[in-house]
Figure 1: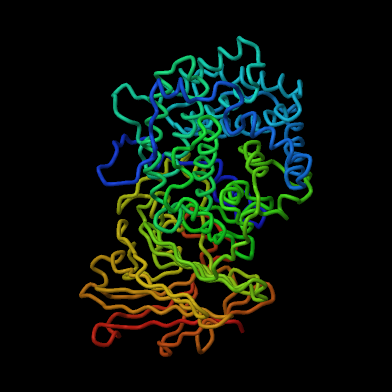
Figure 2: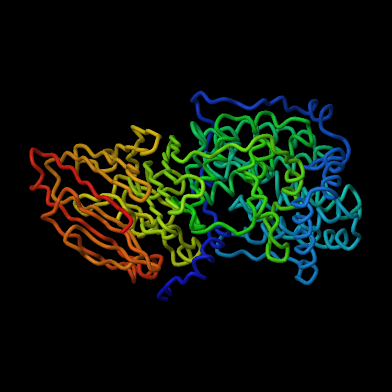
Length: 633
Protein backbone atom coordinates (compact mmCIF):
# COMPACT_ATOMS: atom_id res chain seq x y z
CA UNK A 1 0.00 0.00 0.00
CA UNK A 2 1.52 3.30 -1.05
CA UNK A 3 2.19 5.55 1.92
CA UNK A 4 0.31 8.84 2.05
CA UNK A 5 2.04 12.19 2.22
CA UNK A 6 2.49 13.31 5.79
CA UNK A 7 0.47 16.36 6.68
CA UNK A 8 1.19 18.55 9.67
CA UNK A 9 -1.39 16.57 11.63
CA UNK A 10 0.17 13.27 10.60
CA UNK A 11 3.57 14.55 11.68
CA UNK A 12 2.27 14.87 15.22
CA UNK A 13 1.02 11.30 15.03
CA UNK A 14 4.51 10.09 14.21
CA UNK A 15 5.57 11.01 17.74
CA UNK A 16 2.91 8.72 19.11
CA UNK A 17 4.07 5.92 16.83
CA UNK A 18 7.62 6.36 18.14
CA UNK A 19 6.42 6.24 21.72
CA UNK A 20 4.17 3.26 21.08
CA UNK A 21 6.76 1.24 19.19
CA UNK A 22 10.08 0.34 20.75
CA UNK A 23 12.42 -2.19 19.11
CA UNK A 24 14.27 -5.25 20.29
CA UNK A 25 17.44 -3.55 19.04
CA UNK A 26 19.45 -4.58 22.07
CA UNK A 27 16.85 -6.30 24.14
CA UNK A 28 16.80 -9.92 23.05
CA UNK A 29 20.44 -10.92 22.72
CA UNK A 30 22.14 -12.34 25.77
CA UNK A 31 24.91 -10.15 27.10
CA UNK A 32 27.13 -10.59 30.13
CA UNK A 33 28.62 -7.68 32.08
CA UNK A 34 31.57 -6.03 30.38
CA UNK A 35 35.06 -6.22 31.83
CA UNK A 36 35.75 -2.52 31.30
CA UNK A 37 36.05 -0.31 34.33
CA UNK A 38 32.83 1.54 35.07
CA UNK A 39 31.71 3.40 38.15
CA UNK A 40 29.34 1.14 40.04
CA UNK A 41 26.27 1.93 42.10
CA UNK A 42 26.22 1.05 45.76
CA UNK A 43 24.81 -2.45 45.99
CA UNK A 44 24.35 -3.81 49.51
CA UNK A 45 21.25 -5.78 48.53
CA UNK A 46 20.86 -9.15 50.26
CA UNK A 47 17.91 -10.86 51.89
CA UNK A 48 19.14 -9.57 55.24
CA UNK A 49 19.45 -6.02 53.90
CA UNK A 50 15.90 -6.12 52.56
CA UNK A 51 14.49 -7.37 55.83
CA UNK A 52 16.31 -4.69 57.79
CA UNK A 53 16.13 -1.66 55.49
CA UNK A 54 13.08 -1.97 53.21
CA UNK A 55 10.31 0.30 54.46
CA UNK A 56 7.66 -1.83 56.14
CA UNK A 57 4.58 0.34 55.59
CA UNK A 58 2.87 1.28 52.35
CA UNK A 59 2.98 3.24 50.19
CA UNK A 60 6.68 2.94 49.49
CA UNK A 61 6.96 3.31 45.70
CA UNK A 62 7.73 7.00 45.00
CA UNK A 63 5.34 7.85 47.83
CA UNK A 64 5.64 7.17 51.53
CA UNK A 65 3.84 8.73 54.49
CA UNK A 66 6.23 11.67 54.81
CA UNK A 67 6.32 12.36 51.07
CA UNK A 68 2.53 12.11 50.86
CA UNK A 69 2.17 14.62 53.67
CA UNK A 70 4.32 17.13 51.77
CA UNK A 71 2.36 16.45 48.59
CA UNK A 72 -0.93 17.25 50.32
CA UNK A 73 0.54 20.47 51.68
CA UNK A 74 1.58 21.54 48.19
CA UNK A 75 -1.87 20.64 46.86
CA UNK A 76 -3.16 23.40 49.11
CA UNK A 77 -0.51 25.99 48.32
CA UNK A 78 1.13 25.43 44.92
CA UNK A 79 -0.80 26.37 41.77
CA UNK A 80 1.27 24.17 39.43
CA UNK A 81 0.76 21.10 41.62
CA UNK A 82 -2.94 21.91 41.97
CA UNK A 83 -3.35 22.24 38.24
CA UNK A 84 -1.50 19.02 37.47
CA UNK A 85 -3.64 17.16 39.97
CA UNK A 86 -6.74 18.60 38.31
CA UNK A 87 -5.50 17.17 35.01
CA UNK A 88 -4.83 13.81 36.69
CA UNK A 89 -8.42 13.75 38.00
CA UNK A 90 -9.76 14.49 34.53
CA UNK A 91 -7.64 11.65 33.14
CA UNK A 92 -8.90 9.32 35.86
CA UNK A 93 -12.51 10.20 35.10
CA UNK A 94 -12.00 9.26 31.45
CA UNK A 95 -10.93 5.73 32.44
CA UNK A 96 -14.30 4.75 33.90
CA UNK A 97 -15.91 4.73 30.46
CA UNK A 98 -13.18 2.60 28.89
CA UNK A 99 -13.41 -1.20 28.62
CA UNK A 100 -11.04 -3.28 30.70
CA UNK A 101 -7.85 -4.24 28.93
CA UNK A 102 -7.43 -7.44 26.97
CA UNK A 103 -4.27 -9.24 25.90
CA UNK A 104 -3.94 -7.79 22.41
CA UNK A 105 -0.52 -8.29 20.80
CA UNK A 106 0.23 -5.93 17.92
CA UNK A 107 2.90 -7.48 15.74
CA UNK A 108 5.22 -8.85 18.40
CA UNK A 109 4.35 -6.30 21.09
CA UNK A 110 1.92 -6.14 23.97
CA UNK A 111 3.51 -2.81 24.74
CA UNK A 112 0.55 -0.53 24.05
CA UNK A 113 -1.50 -2.54 26.57
CA UNK A 114 1.29 -2.42 29.17
CA UNK A 115 1.59 1.32 28.74
CA UNK A 116 -2.14 1.81 28.97
CA UNK A 117 -2.36 0.00 32.30
CA UNK A 118 0.63 1.97 33.62
CA UNK A 119 -1.19 5.19 32.73
CA UNK A 120 -4.46 4.03 34.23
CA UNK A 121 -2.81 2.99 37.48
CA UNK A 122 -0.91 6.28 37.72
CA UNK A 123 -4.09 8.31 37.29
CA UNK A 124 -6.45 6.24 39.43
CA UNK A 125 -3.78 5.44 42.01
CA UNK A 126 -2.90 9.08 42.62
CA UNK A 127 -6.57 10.01 42.99
CA UNK A 128 -6.92 7.23 45.54
CA UNK A 129 -3.82 8.34 47.41
CA UNK A 130 -4.98 11.94 47.64
CA UNK A 131 -8.71 11.45 48.23
CA UNK A 132 -9.19 7.82 49.27
CA UNK A 133 -11.69 7.67 46.44
CA UNK A 134 -13.64 4.38 46.63
CA UNK A 135 -14.59 4.55 42.97
CA UNK A 136 -10.93 4.75 41.99
CA UNK A 137 -10.11 1.85 44.31
CA UNK A 138 -12.84 -0.33 42.79
CA UNK A 139 -11.68 0.39 39.27
CA UNK A 140 -8.06 -0.29 40.20
CA UNK A 141 -9.16 -3.68 41.46
CA UNK A 142 -10.85 -4.47 38.15
CA UNK A 143 -7.84 -3.29 36.14
CA UNK A 144 -5.39 -5.38 38.19
CA UNK A 145 -7.52 -8.53 38.02
CA UNK A 146 -7.88 -8.15 34.25
CA UNK A 147 -4.17 -7.91 33.42
CA UNK A 148 -3.08 -10.44 36.03
CA UNK A 149 -5.35 -13.00 34.39
CA UNK A 150 -3.56 -12.64 31.05
CA UNK A 151 -1.87 -15.89 30.00
CA UNK A 152 1.47 -14.03 30.14
CA UNK A 153 2.87 -10.53 29.71
CA UNK A 154 4.69 -11.31 26.47
CA UNK A 155 8.18 -12.11 27.76
CA UNK A 156 9.60 -12.43 24.25
CA UNK A 157 9.45 -8.61 24.12
CA UNK A 158 10.47 -7.86 27.66
CA UNK A 159 9.66 -4.15 27.63
CA UNK A 160 6.03 -5.28 27.74
CA UNK A 161 6.70 -7.28 30.91
CA UNK A 162 8.63 -4.44 32.53
CA UNK A 163 5.98 -1.77 32.07
CA UNK A 164 3.21 -4.17 33.07
CA UNK A 165 5.14 -5.16 36.18
CA UNK A 166 5.64 -1.57 37.21
CA UNK A 167 1.93 -0.87 36.72
CA UNK A 168 0.81 -3.79 38.87
CA UNK A 169 3.44 -2.93 41.49
CA UNK A 170 2.16 0.65 41.73
CA UNK A 171 -1.43 -0.57 41.95
CA UNK A 172 -0.68 -2.86 44.88
CA UNK A 173 1.52 -0.36 46.68
CA UNK A 174 -0.63 2.73 46.30
CA UNK A 175 -3.76 0.92 47.46
CA UNK A 176 -1.94 -0.07 50.66
CA UNK A 177 -3.57 -3.46 51.10
CA UNK A 178 -7.11 -2.15 50.55
CA UNK A 179 -7.69 -4.32 47.48
CA UNK A 180 -9.43 -7.66 48.13
CA UNK A 181 -7.07 -10.27 49.56
CA UNK A 182 -7.70 -12.46 46.52
CA UNK A 183 -6.61 -9.64 44.21
CA UNK A 184 -3.47 -8.98 46.22
CA UNK A 185 -2.51 -12.65 46.09
CA UNK A 186 -3.33 -12.90 42.38
CA UNK A 187 -1.23 -9.80 41.62
CA UNK A 188 1.80 -10.83 43.69
CA UNK A 189 1.76 -14.26 42.07
CA UNK A 190 1.54 -12.63 38.64
CA UNK A 191 4.44 -10.31 39.45
CA UNK A 192 6.54 -13.35 40.30
CA UNK A 193 5.41 -15.79 37.61
CA UNK A 194 4.72 -13.41 34.71
CA UNK A 195 7.12 -10.63 35.65
CA UNK A 196 10.26 -11.47 37.59
CA UNK A 197 10.80 -15.19 36.92
CA UNK A 198 10.82 -14.70 33.10
CA UNK A 199 13.68 -12.23 33.64
CA UNK A 200 15.85 -15.16 34.74
CA UNK A 201 16.42 -17.31 31.62
CA UNK A 202 16.62 -21.08 32.07
CA UNK A 203 20.07 -20.93 30.45
CA UNK A 204 21.36 -19.27 33.59
CA UNK A 205 22.73 -16.36 31.59
CA UNK A 206 21.60 -12.78 31.98
CA UNK A 207 19.10 -11.43 29.44
CA UNK A 208 20.61 -8.91 27.02
CA UNK A 209 18.78 -5.97 28.51
CA UNK A 210 20.08 -6.59 32.06
CA UNK A 211 23.53 -5.22 31.17
CA UNK A 212 22.65 -3.57 27.86
CA UNK A 213 23.58 -0.03 26.85
CA UNK A 214 20.24 1.43 25.82
CA UNK A 215 16.73 2.23 27.03
CA UNK A 216 15.83 -1.46 27.46
CA UNK A 217 18.22 -1.64 30.40
CA UNK A 218 16.60 1.32 32.13
CA UNK A 219 13.01 0.26 31.54
CA UNK A 220 13.39 -3.45 32.28
CA UNK A 221 15.60 -3.11 35.34
CA UNK A 222 13.29 -0.41 36.67
CA UNK A 223 10.22 -2.58 36.23
CA UNK A 224 11.91 -5.50 37.96
CA UNK A 225 12.96 -3.33 40.91
CA UNK A 226 9.41 -2.09 41.43
CA UNK A 227 8.01 -5.62 41.22
CA UNK A 228 10.67 -7.00 43.56
CA UNK A 229 9.96 -4.44 46.27
CA UNK A 230 6.27 -5.31 46.20
CA UNK A 231 6.85 -9.07 46.49
CA UNK A 232 9.84 -8.84 48.85
CA UNK A 233 7.94 -10.23 51.85
CA UNK A 234 6.50 -13.09 49.78
CA UNK A 235 9.77 -14.16 48.14
CA UNK A 236 12.74 -12.27 49.64
CA UNK A 237 15.38 -14.39 47.88
CA UNK A 238 13.96 -13.67 44.43
CA UNK A 239 13.50 -9.99 45.27
CA UNK A 240 17.03 -9.58 46.60
CA UNK A 241 18.82 -11.20 43.69
CA UNK A 242 16.70 -9.29 41.16
CA UNK A 243 17.29 -5.88 42.73
CA UNK A 244 20.99 -6.67 43.13
CA UNK A 245 21.31 -7.61 39.45
CA UNK A 246 19.50 -4.41 38.48
CA UNK A 247 21.82 -2.18 40.49
CA UNK A 248 24.82 -3.87 38.89
CA UNK A 249 23.35 -3.68 35.40
CA UNK A 250 21.87 -0.16 35.32
CA UNK A 251 25.32 1.43 35.23
CA UNK A 252 25.84 0.13 31.70
CA UNK A 253 23.00 2.39 30.56
CA UNK A 254 23.89 5.29 32.86
CA UNK A 255 27.44 5.46 31.56
CA UNK A 256 26.10 6.24 28.08
CA UNK A 257 25.29 9.79 29.26
CA UNK A 258 29.01 10.47 29.74
CA UNK A 259 30.84 12.74 29.52
CA UNK A 260 28.43 15.66 28.99
CA UNK A 261 24.88 14.33 29.21
CA UNK A 262 24.08 13.47 25.57
CA UNK A 263 21.60 10.62 25.29
CA UNK A 264 22.90 8.75 22.21
CA UNK A 265 19.43 7.60 21.14
CA UNK A 266 18.06 11.14 20.83
CA UNK A 267 15.56 13.26 22.69
CA UNK A 268 12.50 10.99 22.37
CA UNK A 269 14.40 8.07 23.83
CA UNK A 270 15.90 10.31 26.50
CA UNK A 271 12.29 10.81 27.54
CA UNK A 272 11.72 7.06 27.60
CA UNK A 273 14.91 5.64 29.09
CA UNK A 274 15.52 8.54 31.47
CA UNK A 275 11.93 8.50 32.73
CA UNK A 276 12.44 4.96 34.01
CA UNK A 277 15.78 5.78 35.61
CA UNK A 278 14.12 8.77 37.28
CA UNK A 279 11.16 6.78 38.59
CA UNK A 280 13.54 3.99 39.68
CA UNK A 281 15.55 6.53 41.65
CA UNK A 282 12.37 7.84 43.26
CA UNK A 283 11.17 4.31 44.09
CA UNK A 284 14.44 3.37 45.76
CA UNK A 285 14.62 6.63 47.71
CA UNK A 286 11.10 6.25 49.09
CA UNK A 287 11.59 2.55 49.86
CA UNK A 288 15.13 2.48 51.24
CA UNK A 289 15.98 6.11 51.91
CA UNK A 290 18.63 6.02 49.15
CA UNK A 291 18.73 5.48 45.39
CA UNK A 292 22.21 3.89 45.70
CA UNK A 293 23.79 6.55 43.49
CA UNK A 294 21.54 6.77 40.42
CA UNK A 295 20.75 10.49 40.66
CA UNK A 296 24.39 11.40 41.21
CA UNK A 297 25.81 9.13 38.52
CA UNK A 298 28.33 11.08 36.36
CA UNK A 299 26.64 13.15 33.62
CA UNK A 300 23.12 11.96 34.51
CA UNK A 301 21.95 15.31 35.90
CA UNK A 302 23.81 17.08 33.09
CA UNK A 303 21.55 15.29 30.63
CA UNK A 304 18.79 17.72 31.58
CA UNK A 305 20.75 20.40 29.70
CA UNK A 306 20.83 18.09 26.67
CA UNK A 307 17.06 17.57 26.87
CA UNK A 308 16.44 21.30 27.28
CA UNK A 309 18.60 22.19 24.28
CA UNK A 310 16.99 19.60 22.02
CA UNK A 311 13.83 21.75 22.01
CA UNK A 312 14.17 24.15 19.09
CA UNK A 313 12.30 27.50 18.96
CA UNK A 314 9.89 26.11 16.35
CA UNK A 315 8.55 23.52 18.81
CA UNK A 316 10.34 20.74 16.92
CA UNK A 317 13.00 18.58 18.46
CA UNK A 318 16.48 18.38 17.09
CA UNK A 319 15.24 15.01 15.89
CA UNK A 320 18.38 13.02 15.19
CA UNK A 321 18.38 9.22 15.63
CA UNK A 322 14.97 7.53 15.92
CA UNK A 323 13.42 10.65 17.41
CA UNK A 324 9.93 12.06 17.10
CA UNK A 325 9.41 15.39 15.38
CA UNK A 326 7.72 17.63 17.93
CA UNK A 327 7.43 17.87 21.68
CA UNK A 328 4.19 17.89 23.63
CA UNK A 329 2.57 21.21 24.51
CA UNK A 330 2.32 20.22 28.17
CA UNK A 331 5.09 20.42 30.74
CA UNK A 332 7.98 17.97 30.66
CA UNK A 333 7.47 15.96 33.86
CA UNK A 334 10.78 14.11 33.54
CA UNK A 335 12.72 17.34 33.13
CA UNK A 336 10.86 18.54 36.23
CA UNK A 337 12.52 15.77 38.26
CA UNK A 338 15.87 17.33 37.37
CA UNK A 339 14.49 20.70 38.43
CA UNK A 340 13.64 19.17 41.80
CA UNK A 341 17.13 17.72 42.17
CA UNK A 342 19.02 20.83 41.02
CA UNK A 343 16.71 23.72 41.85
CA UNK A 344 17.21 24.99 38.29
CA UNK A 345 14.10 26.89 37.20
CA UNK A 346 14.98 26.37 33.53
CA UNK A 347 14.03 22.71 33.95
CA UNK A 348 10.66 23.45 35.55
CA UNK A 349 8.24 24.46 32.78
CA UNK A 350 5.81 26.28 35.03
CA UNK A 351 3.83 27.97 32.28
CA UNK A 352 3.18 24.64 30.62
CA UNK A 353 2.17 23.06 33.94
CA UNK A 354 -0.31 25.92 34.35
CA UNK A 355 -1.99 25.51 30.97
CA UNK A 356 -5.72 24.71 31.38
CA UNK A 357 -6.01 21.17 32.73
CA UNK A 358 -8.70 20.45 30.14
CA UNK A 359 -6.18 21.16 27.37
CA UNK A 360 -3.45 18.85 28.68
CA UNK A 361 -5.11 15.78 27.23
CA UNK A 362 -3.79 12.36 28.08
CA UNK A 363 -0.92 12.77 30.53
CA UNK A 364 2.33 10.85 30.77
CA UNK A 365 1.82 7.29 31.96
CA UNK A 366 4.13 8.19 34.84
CA UNK A 367 2.18 11.39 35.49
CA UNK A 368 0.91 10.24 38.89
CA UNK A 369 4.42 9.59 40.13
CA UNK A 370 5.56 12.84 38.55
CA UNK A 371 3.10 14.82 40.65
CA UNK A 372 5.20 13.79 43.64
CA UNK A 373 8.41 15.34 42.40
CA UNK A 374 6.56 18.40 41.12
CA UNK A 375 5.47 18.88 44.72
CA UNK A 376 9.09 18.59 45.88
CA UNK A 377 10.41 21.33 43.57
CA UNK A 378 11.96 24.38 45.16
CA UNK A 379 13.79 26.91 43.04
CA UNK A 380 17.29 27.59 44.30
CA UNK A 381 18.70 29.36 41.28
CA UNK A 382 17.78 30.28 37.75
CA UNK A 383 20.75 28.98 35.78
CA UNK A 384 21.17 30.46 32.34
CA UNK A 385 21.35 27.85 29.63
CA UNK A 386 24.33 28.03 27.24
CA UNK A 387 23.93 29.49 23.76
CA UNK A 388 26.75 27.31 22.47
CA UNK A 389 26.99 23.79 23.83
CA UNK A 390 28.79 20.59 23.01
CA UNK A 391 28.06 17.11 24.24
CA UNK A 392 30.74 14.56 23.52
CA UNK A 393 30.46 10.77 23.63
CA UNK A 394 29.38 7.99 21.29
CA UNK A 395 26.99 10.32 19.44
CA UNK A 396 28.52 13.82 19.87
CA UNK A 397 26.26 16.84 19.43
CA UNK A 398 26.76 20.61 19.17
CA UNK A 399 24.09 23.31 19.47
CA UNK A 400 24.26 27.04 18.68
CA UNK A 401 21.39 29.28 19.77
CA UNK A 402 20.58 32.98 19.98
CA UNK A 403 20.45 34.92 23.22
CA UNK A 404 17.28 35.01 25.29
CA UNK A 405 14.75 37.06 23.37
CA UNK A 406 16.56 36.50 20.05
CA UNK A 407 14.17 37.98 17.49
CA UNK A 408 15.57 35.68 14.81
CA UNK A 409 15.03 32.44 16.77
CA UNK A 410 18.41 31.13 15.68
CA UNK A 411 18.96 27.40 16.18
CA UNK A 412 21.60 25.05 14.82
CA UNK A 413 22.26 21.44 15.76
CA UNK A 414 25.03 19.31 14.27
CA UNK A 415 26.43 15.87 15.03
CA UNK A 416 29.03 13.17 14.59
CA UNK A 417 28.68 9.60 15.85
CA UNK A 418 28.25 6.26 14.12
CA UNK A 419 25.34 4.40 12.59
CA UNK A 420 25.64 1.36 14.86
CA UNK A 421 24.81 3.38 17.98
CA UNK A 422 21.45 2.18 19.34
CA UNK A 423 18.76 3.77 17.14
CA UNK A 424 21.54 5.35 15.12
CA UNK A 425 21.53 6.46 11.49
CA UNK A 426 24.14 7.11 8.82
CA UNK A 427 23.99 10.81 9.67
CA UNK A 428 27.51 11.81 10.75
CA UNK A 429 28.16 15.42 9.76
CA UNK A 430 24.46 16.16 9.38
CA UNK A 431 22.76 19.24 10.81
CA UNK A 432 19.51 21.11 11.18
CA UNK A 433 19.05 24.87 10.97
CA UNK A 434 16.24 27.19 12.00
CA UNK A 435 15.99 30.94 11.50
CA UNK A 436 13.08 33.34 11.82
CA UNK A 437 10.69 30.61 12.87
CA UNK A 438 11.39 28.32 9.90
CA UNK A 439 13.23 25.00 9.92
CA UNK A 440 15.20 25.43 6.73
CA UNK A 441 17.43 22.35 7.02
CA UNK A 442 15.68 19.26 8.30
CA UNK A 443 16.37 15.79 9.60
CA UNK A 444 13.83 13.33 8.12
CA UNK A 445 13.23 11.88 11.59
CA UNK A 446 11.68 8.55 12.40
CA UNK A 447 8.88 6.41 11.06
CA UNK A 448 6.55 3.75 12.44
CA UNK A 449 8.36 0.58 13.43
CA UNK A 450 5.29 -1.63 13.22
CA UNK A 451 4.36 -0.44 9.73
CA UNK A 452 7.81 -1.50 8.53
CA UNK A 453 8.04 -4.72 10.51
CA UNK A 454 4.69 -6.09 9.39
CA UNK A 455 5.98 -6.16 5.80
CA UNK A 456 8.91 -8.36 6.86
CA UNK A 457 11.36 -5.47 6.63
CA UNK A 458 14.50 -6.06 8.72
CA UNK A 459 14.62 -2.76 10.57
CA UNK A 460 16.97 -3.73 13.38
CA UNK A 461 19.93 -5.35 11.65
CA UNK A 462 22.84 -2.89 11.61
CA UNK A 463 25.45 -4.66 9.46
CA UNK A 464 26.94 -2.79 6.51
CA UNK A 465 24.58 -4.42 4.02
CA UNK A 466 21.54 -4.60 6.29
CA UNK A 467 18.12 -3.54 5.06
CA UNK A 468 17.85 -0.68 7.59
CA UNK A 469 20.21 1.44 5.51
CA UNK A 470 17.97 1.34 2.43
CA UNK A 471 15.57 3.73 4.16
CA UNK A 472 15.97 7.45 3.50
CA UNK A 473 15.47 8.21 7.19
CA UNK A 474 18.39 5.93 8.07
CA UNK A 475 21.01 6.38 5.33
CA UNK A 476 23.32 9.26 4.51
CA UNK A 477 21.38 10.20 1.36
CA UNK A 478 18.54 11.39 3.59
CA UNK A 479 20.69 13.71 5.69
CA UNK A 480 22.47 17.03 5.22
CA UNK A 481 26.04 15.78 5.03
CA UNK A 482 28.57 14.78 2.36
CA UNK A 483 28.33 11.53 0.42
CA UNK A 484 31.18 10.15 -1.68
CA UNK A 485 30.86 8.00 -4.81
CA UNK A 486 27.12 7.73 -4.07
CA UNK A 487 27.94 5.07 -1.49
CA UNK A 488 26.68 4.40 2.01
CA UNK A 489 28.70 5.46 5.03
CA UNK A 490 30.73 2.81 6.82
CA UNK A 491 28.25 1.57 9.42
CA UNK A 492 30.62 1.48 12.38
CA UNK A 493 32.79 4.43 11.39
CA UNK A 494 32.93 6.89 14.31
CA UNK A 495 32.83 10.62 13.51
CA UNK A 496 34.42 12.46 16.42
CA UNK A 497 34.11 15.98 17.77
CA UNK A 498 37.65 17.38 17.54
CA UNK A 499 37.22 21.08 18.25
CA UNK A 500 34.69 23.38 19.91
CA UNK A 501 34.78 27.05 20.85
CA UNK A 502 32.14 29.26 22.45
CA UNK A 503 31.82 33.04 22.29
CA UNK A 504 29.99 35.40 19.97
CA UNK A 505 30.88 33.23 16.96
CA UNK A 506 30.87 29.63 18.20
CA UNK A 507 32.55 27.00 16.08
CA UNK A 508 32.73 23.20 16.11
CA UNK A 509 34.59 20.64 13.99
CA UNK A 510 33.96 16.93 13.40
CA UNK A 511 36.40 14.44 11.92
CA UNK A 512 34.24 12.42 9.52
CA UNK A 513 37.08 10.39 7.98
CA UNK A 514 36.04 7.04 9.45
CA UNK A 515 32.61 7.00 7.80
CA UNK A 516 34.11 7.08 4.28
CA UNK A 517 36.44 4.08 4.41
CA UNK A 518 38.61 4.00 1.31
CA UNK A 519 36.56 6.65 -0.48
CA UNK A 520 38.40 9.53 1.20
CA UNK A 521 41.71 9.95 3.01
CA UNK A 522 40.45 12.72 5.25
CA UNK A 523 37.27 14.70 5.90
CA UNK A 524 36.73 17.40 8.53
CA UNK A 525 33.49 19.38 8.74
CA UNK A 526 33.36 22.69 10.61
CA UNK A 527 30.25 24.65 11.55
CA UNK A 528 30.44 28.31 12.54
CA UNK A 529 27.81 30.81 13.58
CA UNK A 530 29.47 33.79 11.92
CA UNK A 531 26.62 36.23 12.60
CA UNK A 532 23.26 36.27 14.42
CA UNK A 533 21.53 35.33 11.14
CA UNK A 534 23.95 32.99 9.38
CA UNK A 535 25.76 29.66 9.49
CA UNK A 536 28.91 28.61 7.64
CA UNK A 537 29.59 24.96 6.79
CA UNK A 538 33.18 24.30 5.76
CA UNK A 539 34.46 20.92 4.62
CA UNK A 540 38.15 20.12 4.17
CA UNK A 541 38.80 16.86 2.35
CA UNK A 542 41.66 14.81 1.00
CA UNK A 543 40.74 12.44 -1.79
CA UNK A 544 42.01 8.89 -2.23
CA UNK A 545 42.55 6.74 -5.29
CA UNK A 546 38.97 5.55 -4.86
CA UNK A 547 37.46 9.04 -4.82
CA UNK A 548 35.33 9.77 -7.88
CA UNK A 549 32.52 12.13 -6.83
CA UNK A 550 31.94 14.26 -3.73
CA UNK A 551 28.32 15.30 -3.13
CA UNK A 552 27.47 18.10 -0.69
CA UNK A 553 23.85 17.66 0.47
CA UNK A 554 21.17 19.76 2.15
CA UNK A 555 17.69 18.43 3.00
CA UNK A 556 14.81 20.90 3.02
CA UNK A 557 11.06 21.19 2.56
CA UNK A 558 11.33 24.81 1.39
CA UNK A 559 10.81 25.91 -2.20
CA UNK A 560 14.16 26.20 -3.98
CA UNK A 561 15.27 28.68 -6.61
CA UNK A 562 18.71 28.13 -8.13
CA UNK A 563 20.71 31.37 -8.34
CA UNK A 564 24.12 32.31 -9.82
CA UNK A 565 25.66 32.27 -6.32
CA UNK A 566 23.91 29.15 -5.06
CA UNK A 567 20.24 28.85 -4.16
CA UNK A 568 17.38 30.75 -2.52
CA UNK A 569 15.04 28.92 -0.17
CA UNK A 570 11.51 30.22 0.35
CA UNK A 571 9.07 29.11 3.04
CA UNK A 572 6.26 30.72 5.04
CA UNK A 573 6.87 34.07 3.36
CA UNK A 574 10.56 34.11 4.35
CA UNK A 575 13.81 33.49 2.51
CA UNK A 576 17.23 31.98 3.16
CA UNK A 577 20.28 32.34 0.95
CA UNK A 578 22.50 29.32 0.31
CA UNK A 579 25.81 30.70 -0.98
CA UNK A 580 28.39 28.55 -2.74
CA UNK A 581 31.54 30.44 -1.77
CA UNK A 582 34.24 28.09 -3.03
CA UNK A 583 33.02 26.48 -6.27
CA UNK A 584 31.42 29.23 -8.40
CA UNK A 585 31.94 27.15 -11.52
CA UNK A 586 29.56 24.49 -10.21
CA UNK A 587 25.78 24.82 -9.91
CA UNK A 588 23.49 23.37 -7.29
CA UNK A 589 20.95 20.81 -8.43
CA UNK A 590 17.68 19.82 -6.75
CA UNK A 591 16.53 16.22 -6.30
CA UNK A 592 12.87 15.81 -5.40
CA UNK A 593 12.24 13.30 -2.61
CA UNK A 594 8.47 13.74 -2.74
CA UNK A 595 7.61 10.95 -3.27
CA UNK A 596 10.55 9.32 -1.52
CA UNK A 597 12.60 6.69 -3.41
CA UNK A 598 10.90 3.65 -1.84
CA UNK A 599 7.30 2.94 -0.99
CA UNK A 600 8.37 2.04 2.56
CA UNK A 601 10.19 5.34 3.03
CA UNK A 602 8.62 8.04 5.13
CA UNK A 603 6.79 10.34 2.74
CA UNK A 604 7.37 14.01 3.59
CA UNK A 605 5.55 16.70 1.65
CA UNK A 606 7.89 18.95 -0.31
CA UNK A 607 11.05 17.10 0.71
CA UNK A 608 14.02 17.70 -1.56
CA UNK A 609 17.79 17.35 -1.53
CA UNK A 610 19.96 20.22 -2.74
CA UNK A 611 23.24 18.90 -4.10
CA UNK A 612 26.59 20.30 -5.10
CA UNK A 613 28.37 17.53 -7.02
CA UNK A 614 32.14 17.90 -7.21
CA UNK A 615 34.20 15.56 -9.45
CA UNK A 616 37.24 14.30 -7.55
CA UNK A 617 39.56 15.07 -10.48
CA UNK A 618 38.95 18.80 -9.92
CA UNK A 619 40.52 18.64 -6.45
CA UNK A 620 43.95 20.29 -6.73
CA UNK A 621 46.82 18.36 -5.15
CA UNK A 622 44.33 15.81 -3.88
CA UNK A 623 42.66 18.31 -1.56
CA UNK A 624 39.57 20.50 -1.61
CA UNK A 625 37.69 22.93 0.58
CA UNK A 626 33.92 23.41 0.33
CA UNK A 627 32.43 26.46 2.01
CA UNK A 628 28.68 27.06 2.03
CA UNK A 629 27.02 29.92 3.89
CA UNK A 630 23.36 30.00 4.93
CA UNK A 631 22.03 33.46 5.75
CA UNK A 632 18.93 35.59 6.09
CA UNK A 633 17.89 37.19 2.82
